[in-house]
Image 1: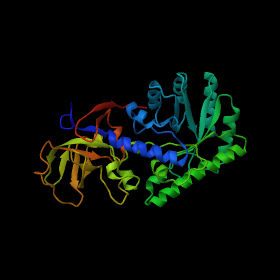
Image 2: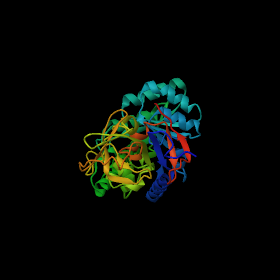
Image 3: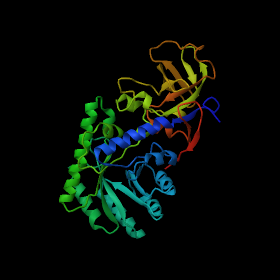
Image 4: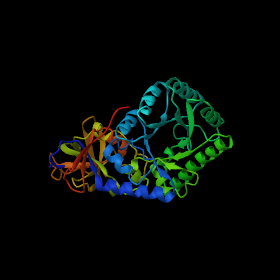
Length: 377
């Protein structure tokens, strides 16, 4: 059996027992809130992880790429929400996925987009479910809740033959900038109120709104009430990461993902080199604006125990530069050439996407399984 001492570095390591605990926690949390779970698989990108996320009879899945949608359908998942604004050029591919017996729902935040979907669906002789994307916090895409175009799009989806109104959705990405648990709770209520209010407007205008969908790991964790919401979309909870820990959404010990690396040298300035650069860790600096800046990742020993004073301070393509966060010199005798370390990621999604497979452990150094990931778009 291979171990973390024998596999090549850098390598992506997944502790499945920690992951299982994260999955159970979110499943219980969503059940407590009285809504369905539609896990976002953009973080996982592996059927071995996705099937575990789907335990407990949740809803379908959310994807961020059509490659993920195709992958899920190939593995028997037939209820898919493609949660990125649709453009006409992608609709033929969506139709081909749907022709394989899957229901794939697309999203739009414009009248032009809705008309394009309807026109292409008519050419295929199909009917596409379409959700309206709402911007609940100014974070990214979507219509403001009070925009008149919301009802205009809803009526178009209701009346055109190639489409049908599937509901409304939003992502409270602004919650990632919260600094207190109460602020995340407030963001969750803002998220809920925005889409529930839009759903009520649509229904009052005679437009069906069967699904009211919200989603972010912080807001799902801290929400007190989801009255009027039908489903929650969450993804990073499956692994957690340093950003989530910095928000107080999880503990450092809840982070299931790490990058295995080797010490490859020591610098004259007292820093240390490892063979995990930005191609292994990503260049995500999500903790930079948090009270504790974790650089490009927090360094751990081979067992996954954090070495609190050590972070990856800089990255080149294949080199990570490890520094003591207090500016002290690293003793080379404590970290000899070839010593193996693990780095916890700032952003699990960004780090995982740099790798093609998970080396799965279960609380020890033994690699018990290798799970492949889907990539591309």
